[in-house]
Length: 212
Image (cartoon, rainbow, N blue to C red):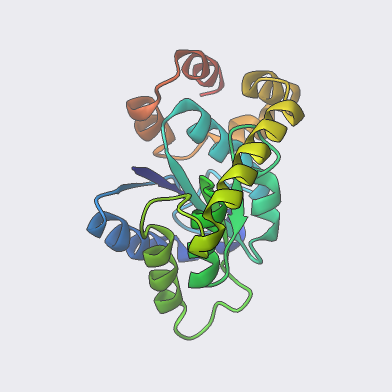
């Protein structure tokens, strides 16, 4: 699985620590991690939590990433932004049990973490434990085990509901947004290098090429 890390401007200074922690855990489980920044608070390409949502949607819907790890000060804004787009199912994760149950019950493809609220002494340990539980076992396995059948049924119902709710294609949605906002979301230093090497959707690739 290819995992993408995205940090917005208020918490960009923590990118190196979050990336190192995520990479260590993910690689131990056979996954790879691409760091889309921001890499530092003074990066020329600034991302807001809203742009985290745009970038995550582009990466997930194009196949450039299979899973996104992101966040903001509380984790709430980034979670809401990501869930505003089709093809993205993002959970708000505060602790390891949140991570485990989100993946086992909801089987999503993104999480949003609080990188300021409650992010104090031992924060890197909490991140390590979150990532370990996030990628433990097969997603959608259910928790507790006696709830597997109804949980899997409800997840299918949710997926069908979201297909109805998101009738427009991602490209149509992106074209309806302020294009400067969209361009800013894909303006990171390494975006072109990482995205075009991993994108699996020719239509999205062609649209993104008009932005960068």
